[in-house]
Length: 633
Image (cartoon, rainbow, N blue to C red; front, side):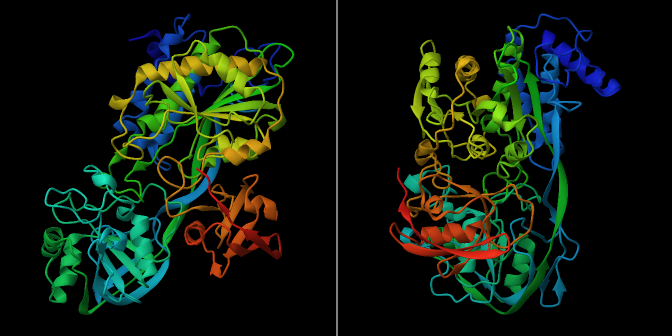
């Protein structure tokens, strides 16, 4: 057992007994008024930087015990406590005005299905949790209609398969299996490039819900294919940014077979086997069968917390800050919208983002055992990034230190899979000195740097700071087949690569401590990572246009439309004058109820299209004419 582990145990015990209220005197030159929990009497001193080893911290963060660190799960709080104990072990200071290492806030999330939920076959009532369970992204309200079986609920005529071809499901309740047509070995027939381990986008819950809604269905009942896995209902957990346009429920195979039998149709296994053997849909209207129901979802005010600590600086710039951040949450159990693994699978998030979190812990340990930095360093592990940058948005909207005192922000998100010594860099164009700082840090590093966009916009926490015109850098080791899957486990991490990233980041931080204050270079945002698109963060093949709005995922208000937190410079939305707080309610003739509606509208558009957009700004409804631009890259 290392000295650090001994100290962890002692600190946890001491904090439990004393509530972490004992404090030591602050650095006389530090701007930090809050002081660090004392660790002087909790164990042997002289901890070396190597004691904060990702080979120790990362496996714990990605362990089964922490349940995938999903919002609303106890494992997320355990992770926060663990990170805080690490900061305490290094003698770091809490945020100004905070008694501990937590920046706490409330967030309204969906807690579970309401007792008012119901599902009937005629007058036969099915039991919630036993026979069926609403899905978190379902539209709320009542539904009713005749029943149709639509195979896998896939509409992919371009791939030679369409469960909706030749069947009218308008106003009906459709039953569809999860996944997509398979061969006799259980491999997808639709996966791109013949990927034997994967599925196409048509297997996602969102694609199935969209296909059903597009064909006029009133509701979608999803069932596990026979023999593919235990017939379990997916726990009501995880996140789903885009609510469905229709009601969506999971339903047990036994209930589906009851519906099929009442209509005189073959059972589920027979229908599945026929699709497998022929690769042809077996869709059919289930005669004289009517299903009705109601879906209501309870909202919950969740208590969340960022975990943050300050290493006070010394000297004339000690009142300025370099922020080094990473999100510590992941998807939890059985992420809705993802089809990988049996229901309830743990999405361990070893790379995403236990890797970035453990690197933060290591950097905090290293730098706290050296001389005081020239600028104060704020280490922060954000919560609820997977829910839509919730933690980082809260931080910049309720800053514990003045935003104009933050010189730069470095974000580490997925740095655990270094391959070919390549580290991807984003945001390096947001301050004029960043290129030289990166070049200097790279002189002694074995890493090869590759740009993924010089701007600060992108799908991770650095964007929250970029929107506040704080220069940002984003470090990333690249996507892989385990992204957002239960198979993102600690055993697949490149720990030597993490050490190299930590070495490199430490040198970058040193450069940021010393650099002159640089303004944010807005023009760089024209070359940012894309917010939507394919797994490599590029544009989807079917989506070649850009509007340039940045959705506001952090809002907890219930409203119809797409609330935005800003626009990307140089885009049509920016040129039209859209701004933070605008609520988009119409795109051309299409009414916008949610982000999925906007995404679909853009997918149906082409560069050069001139579109009238309606927004609500305050109490006014305003129309803008925009010309859609071509998405580059």
